[in-house]
Length: 247
Image 1 (cartoon, rainbow, N blue to C red):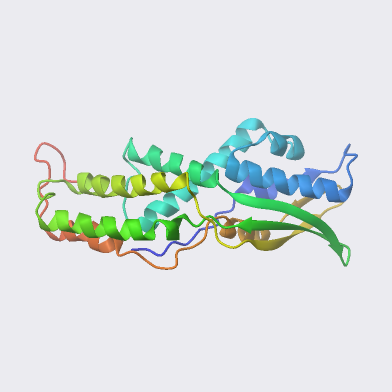
Image 2: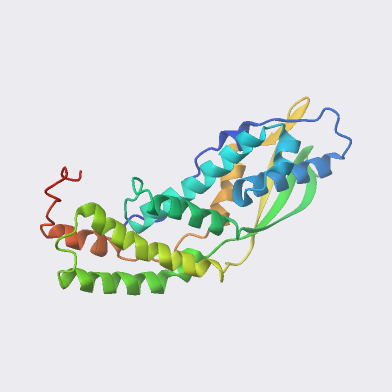
């Protein structure tokens, strides 16, 4: 079981895109607030129109940024739950779709813009999505039931890939069922610094990661996924004699 850690991979389109000040009649506060709103909407909701207008990115670039972000979440979740489905043509896309739906529940509010020692900041208040803790009891119960199925010999003729997919399918079902009634943690506020150049502005890597780390809450406990994903593999699982041995 790997602890769930939200890896903040730098999303280059969102972090390095300088926003030009040319031809913009809005006040600095309005510009900065709109920029942060568009950044959050594009990365987590897949709503990219304002981001494209604000930054000058192309629609394809903005869509690619969003897909990279949801794929990152899907990868983090599969790592957390300890299974490997990257090569499965059905389950891998399902996990990406779940990631989209989870991020679609992102709860945030871009609030005040203020200036301190000639530096502008934007406050963003985020209520972290609590789906990992919300589903913890169901996941643990599922693992216990799955281990009982293992002990009964249900999977003795499964390949490793078939076994992994069977286990992953149950976790995916639990996450999917929780999305419509998502729960949230207490809101927290991050002050994002606006980095200004002579004719443009942007936010830094650390501030984007600070926002990203709050969107989904980390888990309070670690379900013993290893017991489910490893116990059948401790037995001799016959490989498909008509195919190559799974790696």
